[in-house]
Length: 377
Image (cartoon, rainbow, N blue to C red; front, side):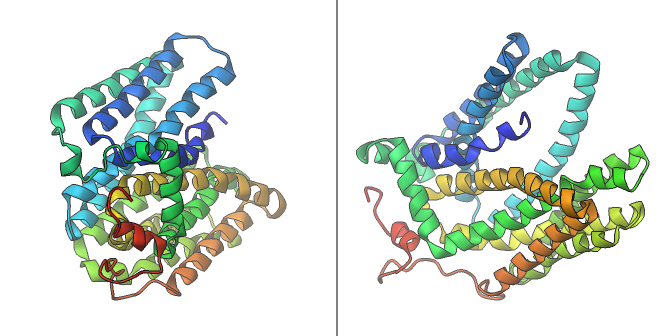
């Protein structure tokens, strides 16, 4: 619960507050996000609270996270155009994976040496440094430069109402909904399998040192996949490879039904991680399908949905493992990813990009209508 409480509320935050990512200047939002993380870590470090209160502090931060992350993602989309945007997202994925590995190692060492409360204080200091760095280094962009729509929510009855309305428009649009599901579902299924790796290693009596190796194979595979696919392949080739790479995420996991040994398990997990590069082929079509005045909320919703489903996945496949064993449950998760790849094949164009909404003619897609509407609408 302590781990999941940092992820599950993000979906509600995106639905209720996501429109703020498109209405407030990005520098202030991003710096405020780091400052809020700093305050929460400092509060947990210095104040001895009941467990429920501590969880509430983390949940409040998670509730606001989609606003800050949506503003950050939208800033990248506004500054980088064409394939530069896809490569920027690839670089962001590489940095995030590397930071996750480094952060887990640093955090574990800090807790061991300093204890949890002092480690949280160190975390607070690092968040404060991030807030100051953003405040000093990030240019102060006005909403006109950023493409925002200041005050649009207030005319419609407030940020909550505007956020719910914007989320409804996004999810009712078939193209955007499909592209979101295509990015949500495989990650959720793989997260379900990843949550069983330690239990699988224990059931197969692997040496304890191999647990960390197996857990590290997925992010290492993701690093390599994003690096090679993002840097070596042309844009259309990346889009053609969406379905094969998505299938590559799932098919190696199916092999766990045979309960492979530690060496083969490591190779299978590396291949699975490599397949995560399929998402690079969806980045540009997803951006093209978004309304320009709702990109921040869309990115926040995409991230929060990912986090929520990745929290649900381990619980679901953990229940399945109780009935069919960990190897079987991992294989079922891989089969679900492969089925999702087949579903993507039914609608994802292998060579042509997702069309940009044509504002000169009518459109049946509600999100495309929203993209052609004025800021007041």
